[in-house]
Image 1 (tube, rainbow, N blue to C red):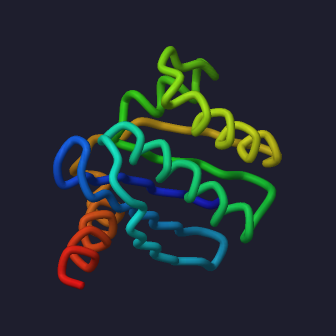
Image 2 (image 1 turned 45 degrees about the horizontal axis):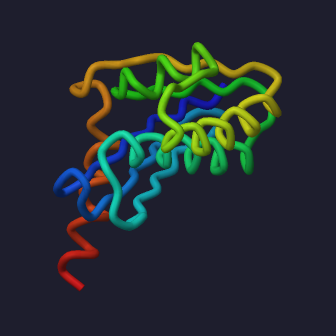
Length: 131
């Protein structure tokens, strides 16, 4: 099983945004930190989900457990629905990938349990602002 921890961070709402992804399991322990542009907080969280699934897909097609501290993202995935058309495109892309795994789960976790992904997301913004 791969555990995929995801987080998005924005310096402003909207503002410069980054995603952090921490993947562990099946002999892997990978960290991804990427600046993604100017977005609001929720969009950045959906982008983190999409990027996390894309990275997990490169490693396994079997059992994937995504962990996120975004209640909006977790609820949208569980319901396979989001009201806002802004987030719908991101959700649809993520669900398309999620459906390729043999088993896919998503779970909400408190921010204190998602520190690795949070730090990676913040690092992406800092690197961009320093350059």
